[in-house]
Amino acid sequence: MYFILLILLALSIYVLNPAFSIFLGSLFAILFKPNEDFPIFQLKALPLQVGIVLMGFTISIDYLIDTNIHYLPWVSLFVVTSFIMAILIGSLFGVNRRLKYMLASGFAICGASAMIAIAPLIKAKPFELLACLMIFFAINMIAILAYPLLGQFLGATNQQFGLFSALAIQDTSSVIGTSIIYSQESAIIAASLKLMRTLWLIPLVIFTSAIFKHEKGSLMSTFPYFVLFFMIAVIAGSLCSLSQGFISFISYSSLVFINIGLFCVGLKFRLNNNAFKLSLLYTSIFTWVFILLSSILLISFILQPSSI
Image (cartoon, rainbow, N blue to C red; front, side, top):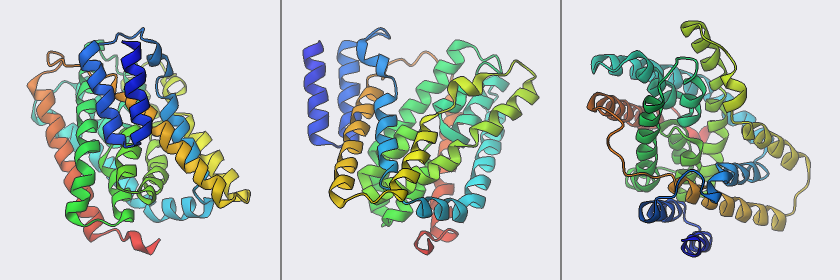
């Protein structure tokens, strides 16, 4: 089993295609069903986080600031609107308060990280969190495989697709994995804007603590601290005069780590359809479609990526 794992991982690194990497990881998971004690699971999201931090060295601090200032009002409005719509759709399908709050947090901000952060605050049951995580995993898989094709079909520019990825996709791994399939420029834009969206995790935890009036402390253990290292990398790369050869090496290394990370994400795939109810599935699908269409309309008719 370990030999096959190494072969598939080496193939993932050789091809360097994020969609192919997550497919190989999922294939191994289906064939061998590794448990949580499997050694590579100890890496968790570390390879992907390293890849994202390395990408920071290739981004100008001026570009990061200009991009986030330009889109701050719209991204903020998008986060709040997505959260409210998920709550309303969940209420329409009769989903309980804990589930629809977790779904709303995941769809609006940063997927699994947001749901894990608030789960203890709302006293979510383990099977409820598992059901939400399974749904988001499936959605992210579809995004990585289908969204680049959708972008090409719609004739999106690299800037537009980077913005689309940052809005329409929730988990950081999937945002980077999807956008980097389209282009390196798209991935840089997506990573820059995803940073702003992830920071909404802070007011989410504070708001949730006030509404549900339970113990605090989840933010410290679940906040994605690699975001801070990403910002440090951006500053360091902007202040230092990096040669083009070194930047090319960093870009290649970033891509290698991202593909290893997505391979690890694929290893978590499980064929299990007994953890969620249809009402939860319907809520997820309708919220997903709303966010997808809203992202397309927002980019097509309101935002102008070329003005950055």
